[in-house]
Image (cartoon, rainbow, N blue to C red; front, side):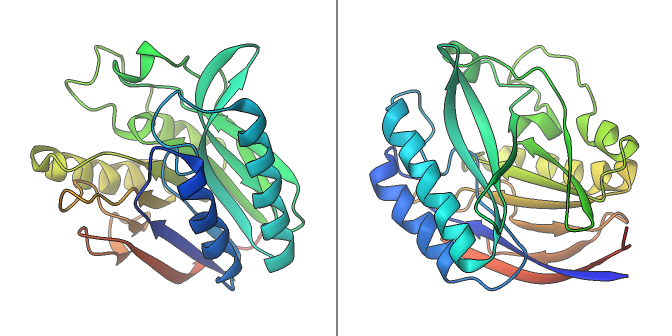
Length: 242
């Protein structure tokens, strides 16, 4: 067995990267461990109003912080490729290099007003850990958020050999969805045979409706943050060494 230290950050996500970037870099610089996960669109804010040039410069600063602190970060951001906007998770290694990206494959109906769905479900390997990334609705395909078929992406990642799924979220505070989100995280972890590490954006309007924490392949919460306010967890996770 190998032990990896994982941190999940439940932070308020402002509309602009000028507010979000310093917080992201501060979390990276203040953490000693292996992986750190941030919420959906934690860098740019949950919108399409971001400068490509300034966003790319922010990515470089995040990579530099990862290299300086020897941390691998999974950071939610907006991104444009070939003039099209995507909701993306970017993985920067402890060497400051971009390992890869995941583009949200099942955007909600509201997302689709300004972004395109991704095209590929990827699996990544780094330092003996095999993992995948999902973004919010990718995992639970929430009823009422669009008439989309459920591709069971977490199950697909498990079949591809993933040991961990890093799940970045920005789900809001509507408590009617709390039980659905919690049950889905547990059942998807069981079905996929993976640990699911999930980080949700905090809200100034009250408790969020999906927890931040880690669910085991048995569907049990190993660690969970309070749903009200900004928090982060650090957890030493045992996985089979590859």
